[in-house]
Image (tube, rainbow, N blue to C red; front, side):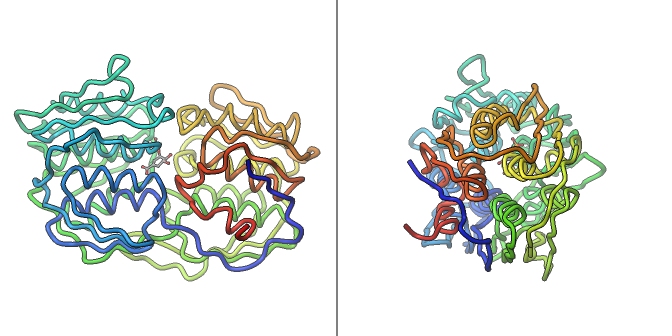
Length: 429
Ligand code: S3P
């Protein structure tokens, strides 16, 4: 049980946030496919990325970890080995889906499992295109859920052209990774642009990719060439909690250093600014193909807004934090096309309605794929459950800090993406 008290004063100062989760996963996976050592700095040592580290070690990579730095020594694109044990992806959809794509073309057997949340999440969306390319993959519940086994392939996979029914960077990345080993080019078409870290890093490692509209084509590769160093920018999904808290808590003034501001991730900035937030990008720079900046935010009055469609994949993980902002805004906010939130680490639409309404009654409601927030209602202290979901825990915590406080049943889940979140919110206690 963790009790968060209302913030006594405004929220001010300079913050460093942990490394980007998506880029950390990809830097371990791609570095493991090279022949020279890669030093990854500002690596997110959260539980999800450590699941990827453990899986890549079992697949033959050598990985040394010290604090926020890892050194990855791979065995080349065709040097992966049959793991001696089941690969455990823990809570991490990214680990599982990307590694399904990586293991699908291999000439050895791999079996995956994960925690109870991941075992309930949909995997047919990634198995289907890989099987279409010639992979043999079987899973529980008619090939929909973990545990999943990838059988050795006799021949290389075929290059496919696949139109994804849902915008998912994980599924896109799985298909692209499998495409590295295919007989001919692979094209994946997304319904709307999702985060493109895989494409950027693959290109930086020498793979040949072509983008045309929403189609991405990858050519089979003989080898990947690693840079000596990768510096992971801060995670905008982690910055989101501080952007919202500083905006809604009067008198605040915060600078968040070194935040990744890749265009496919900045939907949160667009929506907060549309609501009336005052967020400024300073010191914008690009490194390793990824843009980063310092974000300066001061508190301001917010108005309800309506949005959906193409912007959703650009802010999908920030919807719980945006829902908090909307509860403090004047008027109603309507967030459309967010049905994907029902299959995240928890059913986030249900969790938001169940838990956030305890802190601000009759504020939140949802249909199958729309979230409606009636802002400006009275706020109370309440005991809430995090649904063992890191983003719910952090969103509830900032909600309580900005209002009348909150007690969380289980706060340990923040270790998935932001191990020292509570130190930043309330200091060491
Ligand atoms: C991620 C993609 C998104 C996101 C997740 C991380 C990634 O998932 O929600 O937290 O690193 O590729 P989907 O691909 O399921 O949309």
